[in-house]
Length: 310
Length: 213
Image (cartoon, each protein chain N blue to C red):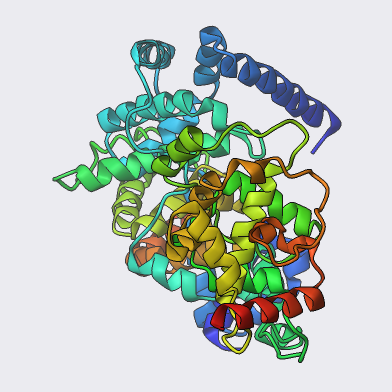
């Protein structure tokens, strides 16, 4: 055993109850008997320890202590607020010994509870365990994504679409109440749209689902614009509506609320129940998308597209 | 530890807990009582770190003022004395950092015992008492030469008698670090005082041989 190891053991023994003379340290004393240098070091340190532990407390009179306590009480009573840094945190040492201590194993390789705790946490968050988790990256499954999520969340930028918030949310709830797809950022219509709605749109009759229906139309139109171009566009349907409303299709897409507000009053009288499928007249546009089956909707669109082109 | 001393310690803790809760509720008299209970050890700690009686008094006042401000944050998981030691060390280290001069360790050092006796040996020989005072003066100078981390740890554990566990709590480091600092400080003090310690040990041994049995 090296001299430094022996000195560390002496230091550890001094910190135990009974010191180096305790029966538990008989083997250490035996080793010291065969090492003159270590024995001299141990004798000096034992004496040093006795001097430190026997350092007499500062002798002060009772009047001194009472005066000191009175000054403390006076300062506490006169103190205002909590100015100054918090001194209840552990002191920070920036000297070389503190830096070395932070890098050094405890004396004798002692087990430290905090270190064990840190090591346990290190194991808990190890890269090895993380690698055993499932792959977090999305994978192609071949299944189509929900149309609502594609149309509203991925394609339509909120800053461009600006759907009417409350009505659109209600329409979405009616169309797909259990949908878990991420919701788009809902942007309230600008005040001018709100004002136009209040000024132009008549109050809906009781028992109608005007707001939800209008919002549903706007969402359906946005979905149509976002659909692949291989599908026939709904130009006649939208063009007829826009012509009736006296506005352009672009404005209709960008501000569904404004278009809905400018629809003829007859559309507001639609019943809350889904109306019958349209038959090619101008009022076909009032049928919301959720009231039609996909196949029927496609065939109707094809018919209207061909008739409009002709 | 005897049963009586355990009972006394339990009664002290119970009384201190009552005073603490009253002080936390705003009872100035209860806080004053806590000041009177703990001010001696806080003063001794500050005096050993600073080596100046006036600065130590200021440190005591600042320590209790800071403790009073933060009293609501003390949750009782550690001893109140440990918490006060921590604040005292912070206050004393702040004073040391602001201090322009270096306190000289001489016979006027307030940390040194009166040269009337050797407190570690219990005899009343005036010559031995003078030697002990001189030795403590050298020891105080050697402690001042230590780095702040070693010095504060040595003062808390070896002079004030704080356990290594409580010292770790007060200084915010693992017990292993406390043990390392103590070992390191002992080695450095021994290197600084080695010859004087050896001479002092020889003198003590000679005195014990001369002492009538």
